[in-house]
Image (cartoon, rainbow, N blue to C red; front, side, top):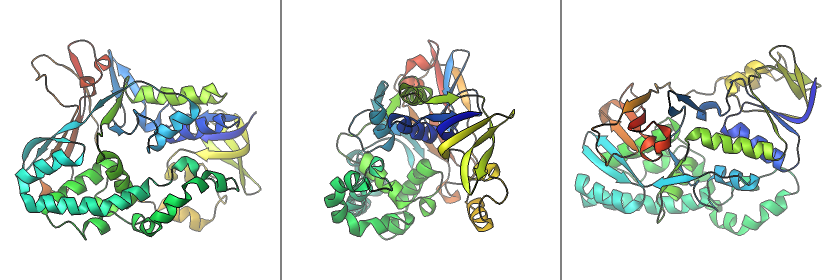
Amino acid sequence: MKQTDVVVIGSGVGGLSCAALLARYGFDVTVCESHSIPGGAAHGFERQGFKFDSGPSLYSGLSYSPSVNPLRQVLDAVGVDLPWVTYDTWGCCLPEGDFDAAVGAEQFCEVLGRLRGEAAVAEWRRLQQVMTPLAQAAIALPPAALRWDIGAALTIGRFAPTLAKQSANFLKLTGPFSRIMDGVVHDQFISNWLNLLCFLLSGLPASGTNAAEVAFMFADWYRPGVALDYPIGGSGALVNALVEGLKKYGGELLLNAHVEQILVEGNKAVGVGLRGGQEIRARRAVVSNASIWDTLKLLPEGAVSQKFRSQRQGTPECDSFMHLHLGINAQGLPLDLACHYIVVNDWELGITAPQNVVLVSIPSILDPSLAPQGKHVIHI
């Protein structure tokens, strides 16, 4: 039987961030990962010299500091970093035609003017005006400042003037983005575009995407001089940086350590039981970075109320999607390829219709080390 302060179940980006911060502030932390490599949905893997991302290839707010991106704040807190490459443009293949779109407001207004005219541009400008105070509210309090003890007076207090100024906007951030969008946007293309952006952010249209998430995007993507980021070495390199931060302060990562049960005694989680019979006891807490549905399966019968279990079990799931990982010969391809291409076949079908929206990423455009010479990595 092993003893530790905190057991973290799962080495996804959330679990590793939590564990690295706990280790940074003096806790004895053990992370249990069922897989043979860390990273959860964001892990990277290699085949025949091609390095693939299993999860996201789209990052922002990570190549500079200070940043409003919570993950950047974690990297800063634990004192680790990795090299980044930046870019600002992706390709769009939409029913209205093919064009390049850049982050930032001005270039999109030029595209919008060509496609829909000046009235649509004016409508987009109005939306930006509405979103500006909401974007400021979304970034008013860094997540790292939140805590639940008396120390909150110190960590949150310094942001009190900004929070007071934004107090009227906080309630607007709690519902779906569609509630804000529908009051301003009437142009069909802008509505379709915003639903597409929401889908890329959350896997859901505007009606299912939290307004705070979109407000954060507006704060990050439509500021002057904005650029998007990609970690050299892919998402696996970002995961490795978090593992480095964990181990830097004495934290432990156990791979091939499948948690079969959360141990509960006296109405308190006190550790985990691993496949094979080993137990890891937690003096302070058990944190689960597994999904809510998988976490419920780990809890013994009666550990939580049936109402609690039913409510969490009813958490809606995003639809599944297909992810192709391809290594191809790059000979004969255009030299001006973008890193990302967004393809929408038919707006009328809706962005969640099967195989209607396709995102193509070619990260080896930005980081040639991901593929052998003369080859490309493609994610679809």
